[in-house]
Length: 114
Image (tube, rainbow, N blue to C red; front, side):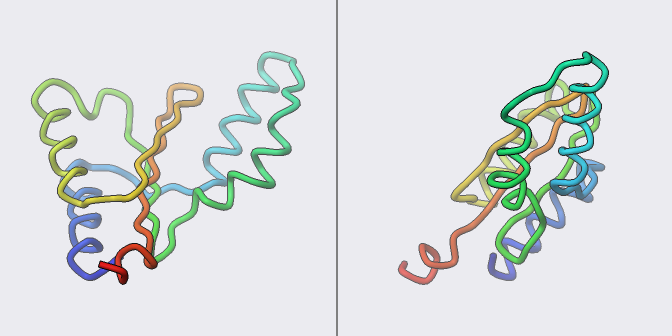
């Protein structure tokens, strides 16, 4: 992420009252849901080993939590426009137990190739 992308990411977090998060927050929520239901989800261990490491904040990745009800009506449209202005190569989200987590990332290799 270059300086302007980093600044936009910081403004996104601050401007919408979001909270930085990482894979441990998501993993805890998944495990809480699994345990609450008394089920063993076979995919969880694979997610922890393979996917979870991508869900951490690095110079090229921004992971945050969107509090329930935070982005409603016009604010949701504004948020979408602001995310678009950050120009992430990856934007994904997941919701567990009423908590929504977002990951945005930028590829250094693609950025330097331009």
